[in-house]
Length: 329
Ligand code: UFG
Picture 1 (cartoon, rainbow, N blue to C red):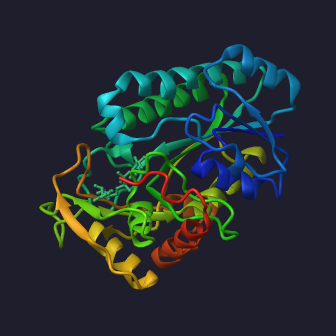
Picture 2: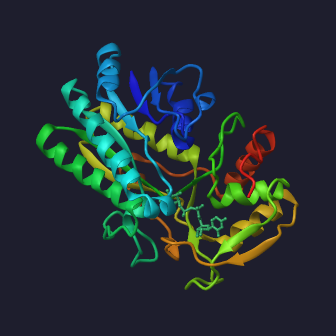
């Protein structure tokens, strides 16, 4: 059985929907940001917090867990600057508890959700895993700290892990049944689509004076199901004993500016956006674009969905979801 911590969240729930086709799955989630209705009905769901040691002990004692996928974290860059304590306690402290219980119960396979925010301000156009890690926010720092801890645990306690540095996860499941549902929503693509669906008055571009071709920030958007499939490949590799430790970027290798994303959403939906330019947001690097060659070479992963497919899937989800508009600004 595979334990998915944070499996009711955006990326976790998409992974679970794919993983249940291959493995028995138990999801634990404290539902602080996740939604139980997003968890596939073929998975066992137990509400609880990874920082709660006795809760975790009960789970590990009750289910034959052979690997852990760990998505449970707070992940808002801006919030982490204002509330670093929350990020270090939840993202680092609670992960320590999870690792402690894993080792106590002899579970030695871990797939960890890390982030491109570990790189800080990039010094290269395309970022590979050898790029220096100098995070500029507590969120990025908290993820890097966990990466460092699990690398040390791997050496000392034979923990076997894969750590994924996600670039900008976006899009929704092909079924249209699950998708991105944050409250408040801070991410660009859902904000633009909510606006184009008529439930948000406008879109604000956070800064148009960056050192990029059109002055707005460039990001590498990767479909959430492509991310899910990378996890399944990594799990298979870990369970086959092929891989002890590895860190991989997950991105498409192409950068799109905020303006390009808005224009692509307009083109694909046929709706014109009302856009203004606002001041820069704290902690935003001008450009974050991944090289994912390492995982392509080592595990054979390549992303299958481009920016159009990402936006179309997200639009389908946004149109169908009845809670659309609960976070209108
Ligand atoms: N943006 C706007 N207007 C908005 C929302 C966003 O201009 O209303 C801009 C942001 O300033 C940024 C870009 O759109 O330049 C993308 O912003 P998102 O909030 O969608 O995503 P981020 O790049 O800030 O963050 C995401 C994840 C983080 C992760 C990071 C790593 O949410 O967890 O990618 O690349 F760390």
